Length: 295
Ligand SMILES: C[S@@+](CC[C@H](N)C(=O)[O-])C[C@H]1O[C@@H](n2cnc3c(N)ncnc32)[C@H](O)[C@@H]1O
Image (cartoon, rainbow, N blue to C red; front, side, top):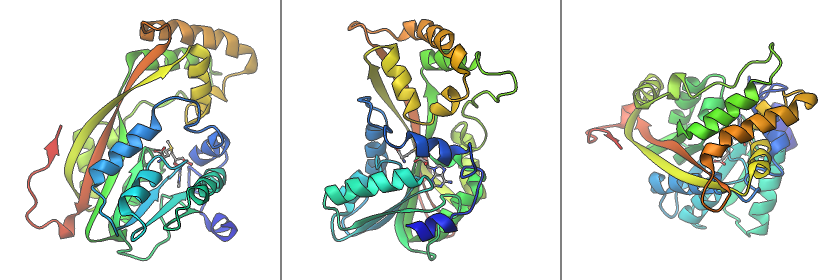
């Protein structure tokens, strides 16, 4: 693992303060705060990828395994799943979970999702759950994934769709307390903003989209403190860690007010999140595919 760590290039996401550093700190609690979010999204991505027993799968930006473990179940021991992530703590903790689960057909290593280090045509499926929008050059990364696919291969990615208005209001309330020189969190935009943009981005990477499907889940939080703990446990910490300590109580109070709109009958909070799951195949291997289905 250490050789790969040293070999990993310093992309924008690997640099200090970049996405991978945020996730390095988040790793111990990532997807471990009792909130249904990454797990069901990862399971749905794998379902859409229609992985068959015996297939070879790459999971880029594997995190704590929300995609990796369902994929390993789908390939079975006659197949193989490799997970890569740029955050060494994510890799170390997920590797421990893999060993504990006795999955000998799974390996996890530090590698850069911007340019994964594998020979061409190594995989039947490349999967990327909630990661491509974090990369400094997403279209180049997608092009690299296309090269890794075998002739029957497919790329399956998930990206964020509509966010719950109460979540947007709460993060805006937090961001209002950031120092003026600190960049505000970006809303989904650019290459994955909507179905048209995703299709164009894939096209430019030499991939043909065969389907884009929206999938929504509801996540429940006991109270605002639980929501804040969850925010610290994933990419949300990129926002929280830049709040000056003396602003935190006021920022949290403002977020709590915004989250009032999400109160449910049990006194907790319920937030709905939508992702889009896109399936694409290398354009040079498309043949006579049916037109893409967008749901
Ligand atoms: C939002 S998490 C998604 C993790 C997992 N796929 C899931 O669905 O739960 C994004 C993951 O991408 C990783 N990541 C960010 N930039 C990366 C890069 N350049 N190369 C590899 N992994 C990266 C982070 O460390 C983090 O584990």
